[in-house]
Structures are given as structure tokens and as C-alpha cells.
Image (cartoon, rainbow, N blue to C red):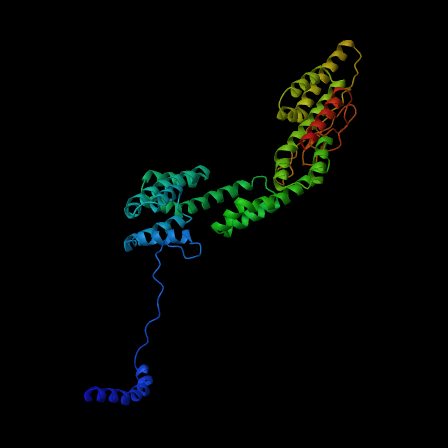
Length: 404
């Protein structure tokens, strides 16, 4: 072995421990190799879990849909606000919904052109509807707005004009209520005419009057009972037993009571035919075939005129026969067709010198010859005859009961 090779070997052996002892410090300064990484997985590759396809599709759509232009976004918000406004009419709402489904140009077109056009059409329709349901003042103001045919005129009427005109109509309506009104309605109307606001007057005309009038109508019904004819009395009792509504009370006072009074009048006239003279019989038949007003007038005055004619004829016949004496034998019967309305108690009437008062304040004359019997059609206990009159009475009362 040559000397240089030996020297190299010895040197390497000498420095090996030093190199080994210095290795930890060197390792600390040297970075460790990176851990092996999992390769990136493609979006379509399975991961072991089921993919949420719906979420992926929504994400794809969002990624594909470009951001809306700022102006278009403002227009969309404005159209949505118009659609949500309760005051928007059907034409405006339909056009707004269509614009929201369209493009940014559709939104802009709606705001600049279609909105005003549809609003004008809707307002014209609303004014026409108000005219149809309104009173004279409302109709006049509404027609003037339509005649002007501008958006400003329509807007003014809808916002202010109709209310001013309706207040005028409501005051006129309250004045009409006073005709034949009961105490409650009269007091309420007078108070509102003096100091009622448009809102108070509107509420009274629309709803409040009905509650007050129901009280007045009950008072009127109880007043009718005092001396009512059999048919009318039965109708009142049956109505009150049924806990009637304000509308049912109003119908009875304004309509049904007159029908029942006419039934009672018809019964009285039929009863007269039993012992009627020629003139009385003829007048009674004419009344039976006539109107309720004809029957009421016959019982009030016509029967007495006919009886006088029969008496005069009988006296003349007696004079011809030479007896020189004679008296009337017919029984005079009275009745009226007047009744209470809206709390009033009717009107008083009298004939000849003997009168009797009915429940409604109406009266009739009694006979001044023969047996005096009070037979009152507007009220009072009726002394009815037999035969066709009683049959008619039973039939009419059954019909009235069926109606109730």
C-alpha cells in the first residue's frame, strides 16, 4: 500500500466521530420533506358520499347568472313595492306582475309608460263604481271628474271629492229619516245634524241607525197590541216570540203590519154582508175586489154613505106604505188601514158622532141607529160575523202565520 492511500484512510477514520456527533444539530436546521398529499379530486368524481345535486345546480346557476345591473335592481324593487300597495288596482297589478317576469327593459317600460296608463284606467273604473252606489251629490262630483278625464281630476275625487259629496248625501238621508221616525231616531238625527262629523254621520247612516230604529220599532209593536185586530195581534206576538232581528222588525213595521191590517179589514167587510142593505152590499163587494186602500176607505167613510142611502130608501118605502114608522136595522162597523211606521202611532180619524179609538190612534164611527158594535180594522177587538167572513179570516191568518 502506498503511503498516500494509508494517510487518507487514517484521516477519514479520525474525522468520522466528529461528523456523527454534529449530525443532530445539522438535522434541526434542515427542513423535513413534505408529507405526501392526496391528489385534487375533480367535481364530478365520487367522494364516497352522495352528492347534493340540487345544491350543485343552484350553485351552477348562480355561477352562470351575471349580477343584475344596479338600475335594474332599483327598478325591480320599485315594481315590487307598487305590486304590494293595496291601493293598486287590478290593471296595475297585472302589468306589474308581467314586468317582474320580464327583462330590465320590461321593468323600465312599466315604470315609465304602463304604470300611469293602467292607473288611469283603474281610477276611472273606481270612480264609476262609486257613482253607481252614491247619492245625488256623489254622482254629480264623480261625473264631473270623469268628464274632465285627467288623472289629476280622478285623483282629487278619489282622495277628497267623494267624501265631501257623501257627507252632503248623508245629511239629506238623515233628514228623510225624520218622517215618521221614533224617538230614538229623531234624537240621534237632530244631534248629528247639529254637531256630527262626516265620519260620525257616515257611521250612523251605514250601520248605527239600524240598532236605534230596532228599539223604536219594538216600542211601536207594543203600541199596536193595544186594541189590535186578531190577525195583527197574532202576527205581533209571533214576531216577538222569535227574537227578531232589526231587519225583521223593520219589515214588519213597514210592510207586514199593513198586510195583516188589510186581512182584518177584509174579514170585517165580509161580516157586513150578512145583513147589508142593497147599497151597503154593493159598496162592500166593490171594496172587497179593490185595493187595501179601498177597503180602508170603505170602513172609514164609505160604509156610512151606503148605510145612509139604504136608510133613506127604507124611509121612503115606509112612507109609501103609509106606516109612518121605521128604523134602520143594519149594524155599522168601522175599520182603518192606518198603522204605525218607524215608531209613530198612526193618525186619528172619526166619522159621524160616535167614535172609538184604535191602537194606532185611528178611529171610526159607530152606528147611530140599530145595535152599536165596535168593529175596528186598525186594531181593537173585532166582533166578527159568521159564514164566508170567518172562513176568509181563518184562511188569511193561516197564510200570515206561514209567512212568519
